[in-house]
Length: 282
Ligand code: PLP
Image (spheres, protein in one colour):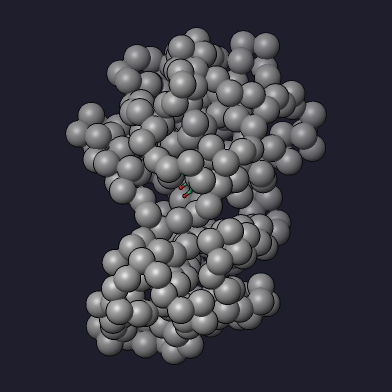
């Protein structure tokens, strides 16, 4: 079956989907993206992903070409055409196509791209053994709440992680962990408190973060929104990160130093399980 992608209102074979050289997403990174997980052929927590897409587009002045219902119809049709059961649905909206210039007309027609990426989410190969993390300086711009396609700092952070045989890079600024290159960072203190950073322009409002906080609350687990340092994480009882592509991922080492007893912690495993059960029953 040929891979079908969505481009500007059309479902086309991957090889036929072409974007002009003058697209501003390509030239300037002038666009927004969103990624929703799919399990058992169902979009997971899609509404907050679409709300974040809408917000990010507003923040940079790109008109949202679709309502949430229209997006969902298109995502669902794309999944159907790709016989898609498990993985990620990617959306990108760029400001559009115009002769290269920092400025462009305000009424440009946004470019809209969607594709599916098969991925093992439920039985992610690192979910059982846990993931190694390294730390890198946070080199990004100051509006990380916007899900911009300008991801150079994250690409470099991920390359550094791969070179160190780690799965993720945590970015550090002013002595505190901001977030992972593509995930939200959490620690669990020895008294059982689950800590993650408060929302601000310094971090992306992770949708999986939101779901995990809600699940923790519903299960009477103790929560605290607070920044933490790498030393705090190394001294923590458990460490994990969350994202649409990893769900809840246990961390077993940071910069080569063991976290906890070097194995995925029980509360992290429980949160992953709670998240998966919620997904199945959604
Ligand atoms: N933080 C950053 C910088 C990300 O890129 C991502 C996901 O790509 C996340 C956090 C996690 O967000 P979500 O749980 O919505 O996937």
